[in-house]
Length: 241
Image 1 (cartoon, rainbow, N blue to C red):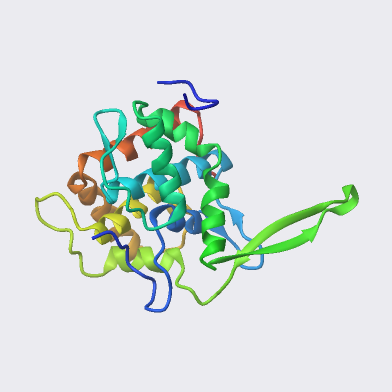
Image 2 (cartoon, rainbow, N blue to C red; image 1 turned 90 degrees about the horizontal axis):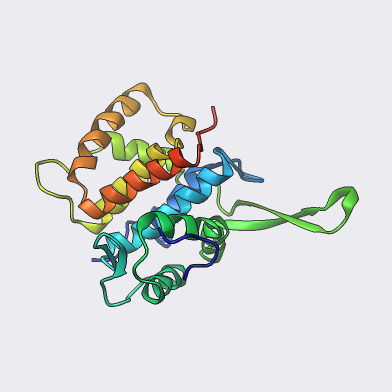
């Protein structure tokens, strides 16, 4: 059983040609933080954990490594592109039969730390040792390794205003597009979007596109986003204003 919880093409696009691609949970983590010398959450820490957990599950859904029947179960060949994804998939394989809410609650216990560690590993974040103050002891903070990296706001604004390849009545299946759109909808569902500065045009187009994209997502991703909203409501987690 999951401890502490009651039972209840694979590549994503690079931010530029010389950097490793960021995954759904990575993008969400960065969008949910502000600051350069020391990053800090824009939203409630429980909501941050929920969003990171949702991002980790979304990555495996996009890559068809997990499915809903309606419980979460493994469905792929286990060819995950990074160790964190493989670790989550290994847990699902070991504990198949739990529902989405259970997995969100379970993964949220450590999701922020794990996603942050992955971002450190790929040199997007760097640890900044700080003094422990009067109580003594070491503490730590994190900063962006490269302030020139495209910001989540800029990435989302381009998604909202650029050419929309996800039009029509068919379900979106291209992994790169699913990654981008899932990130945007996850940011909206958790309240992150309201903390980012967009032009009026980008915000207006973004709202229109997100409404249309949601209906074109595969059912598993729609179910995940709806479950995140339900979990937030059940826990009375509200976005910061």
